Length: 590
Image (cartoon, rainbow, N blue to C red; front, side):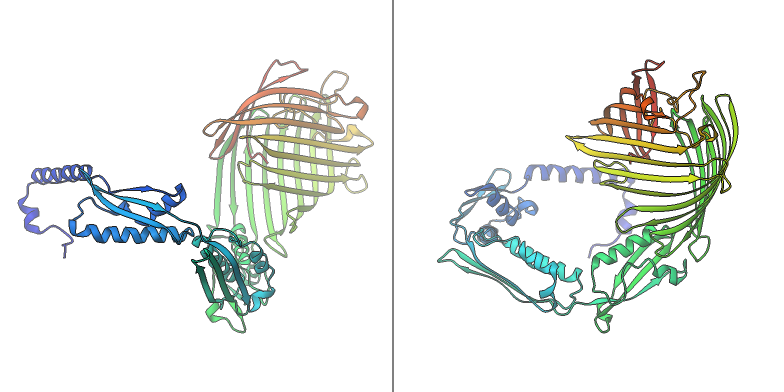
């Protein structure tokens, strides 16, 4: 037995510098010896590259050593001949001619394999049948219609194994826990170079979901059970367990989620499910900086209580400071019905904004019912009270608005941060009445759309935004309800909220309607950097007859930073005071 540590006498009698010399010499000898020996090789002739690669893999010389004693040569050659035969059979060649010899070289040795694979064995019949509950299962029927082997194809053992492993996986994922193979054979007729595949499976009965136990002390069990996406007694599907795990993770209450099944403890074919949940930290804090040319550098601070009580309530506070716009807000969330898809938000906040055209101080208080449909659309019904002191051009005013509204939105993409393909749609309608605690009567609708599609190695990004307002006294509308255009996310080349109808002094006062659009091509250049060219267009207006689109064209670079895309653009307005304008933005593409 090798001692765990060097003998004490050796350690004590060897001075440190002598030990290092000994170790160094040993390492050098080891390197020199391994370099001189090299590695045994296999020289294979005959057959195609697939055959040669498979033979080489079966020979397994990567771990062989060059110091091969003479008495090991003949057994090694015999074993290599048999390994070659197995490698050829795996690919359907059952009648090969094989010659193997071993050749001593100056530094090592090599195997010389000469082969003629002969005619391939082809599939004559395929008999894959089921008995038990799976015979009526549509998933199994679809699998049998698309087997990896077909009659007339060359026999490949790995595809035969795929049939068996595929049936096993399907049985396990769909709750056939008693499934077993009654027959699995490859029957080869060498005289006819034909093979018959026989795979018979008895699936047994299909199990159902049993009771779900949540091992956690964060939420009331009644609330926790609402995250379960299936009912007790429903037929078993492993995909449902993945949905359960994802719903619990996405809830924001838990840091780790492990879901286990116990088929051996099933009663009346109902499998008990256990989810073990580790609590997420109750508090999280946010501190960040950002930059855009619309509002300048900004500082953001925030905190969130992820579980205010066992009923799943949570609340958060956000503070944002920037030269153009600053805000503070509070949000309180109450889960409803299906807590993964439905909640009520209670919000309040204050925002102050100062641009070249308008100033405003806005206080809001609101309630919103938010529900995500199975289709992926999010529906929001809201009621919001807004009190605003504003100044537009030389007009000062105070408004009070009680605005009920509806909003629909959906995002779909192939990546949450850097999508190569995806889209976003949203629509919003709201209104107010002087008969219901408001200083002006109006109705308003907005819609926003963005589409990202592949363009060679790059992407094509398109967007369109539109809004329409119905109002009798436009002058009574506060600045937050009017439409403006221009800026980083509108028409680049123009300043933030720089475009729109003007008063007699040429000051932009905003419009009742607006429409803007953009077309951008982005192409990767090196690493996480991309280049982009774009054209934006649009404007705000009061009447369609007065609509006059303004355009901006430009180019820029994109960096896929760890915190999301960062964009630097230079844009030229086709009709403006500036020759070029710099635009800096951060944020998700969708």
